Image (cartoon, rainbow, N blue to C red; front, top):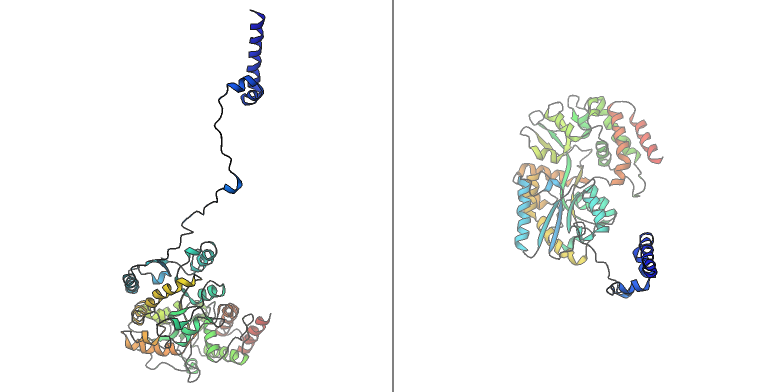
Amino acid sequence: MSFINRRFLMLLVALVLAFSSVGCEQILKEIPFLQEAQPTPAPTATLLPAATPVPQPTISDETPMVDPYQITLWLPPEFDPENGTLAGNLMKEQLDRFKADNEDYTLIVRIKAPTGDGGMLDTLTTASLAAPAAVPGILILPKSEFEKAARAGLLMSIDLSEFQSEQASYFSYANAMTLVKGTRYGIPFAGDALCMAYKPIEVAYPHSQWRELVQSNVKVTAFPASDPQGLMQTLLYMSLGGDFGGDETTVNLDEPFLQQSLLLLSDGANANAFPTWLTDFATFEQSWQALLNSNATYAVLWSSQYLALYPEKVTISPLPRWDDTGFTLADGWILAFPQTSAERLTEYQMLAEYLLETEFMGAWTEAIGLLPVTEGALGQWKNKEVAGTLLQISQSANPLPGNFVMSEIGPLFSQATIEMVRKQTTYIESSNKVLKALTE
């Protein structure tokens, strides 16, 4: 082999070893004649900073686009138009009327629990910040959740004069439910009030005064003495004229009214009108069952509990009074508008007018067993006898205290009620304990 051939062979071997240790790309860069043998890569475009594309937002189920012709309504499960009940069918018919009269709009109905994870308030809080387009145009909330939403700035303030529905005939309790710190954030939709149930076959003329009731030794009045909210004591205290002060950061009680209301519970326990076994009851459903089972002559319960069953041998009346003035506590449901664009509020009001229509509200409340919030709607009821009693109850109703007050007094009033029914202490000692606890 010639010298030249040997050099070439040695060079070739060296190149193979270099390729394996350094890498083809590096060798190609360092050997000019091999570089010239490589194909020239296609030129690549270099984007200038000004030409960098702007990322486009993605669209998902959680962030829907706003449809100017779509109206979303949130309803609680009790008001589901597809539940197959008479009330559900009436709601469905009314919503179908709106759709027929407003064909340009698409009505979306969502059924959501008012409370809990994924409930109305939870979803409303999240969506208002992260996905405003997912916020409904209208929703119907129970009073306690409505107050939370209003205080959190999630609802629009409204002016009732902008609605055609009969504003002047709202019961006072219903009107008051929509006010939070003096501002109106909703429209009354339906109510529920505490009342007295009894069997006419046993009681020809129900007692109309609290004092008469506790002096009747053989008449047992059932109520949930262990109710965590202490509603029986709250009712007695407020019906005497007691309030909680105007400051929303503290609760101030009227000591004379507090003592007098606790004294009634104590006297009732001593007369066996409020037997010890009432402390086993924590719900008004239990006091209702005590009446149905003939363990009690009277029962304090929500009007909706009676209206849901209409037991043949039971009737209801307003609660007993301290004097000539009737008094009861009421809860309810409120129609409200979440914080959405003011431009669309007029469209949402169109749907609200259908939901608040007097004839519809009369038929629907009678079917579902809730109190109408206007006298006009109550006048639509077919059962005129019951409607007459409900009118008296509604006229004497006052809204439940606000969430803060209930959270402060509920446990204290509940414990005081238990102490009175069990005869564990005197009404003065119990009153002092409540007042002391509120100052600590």
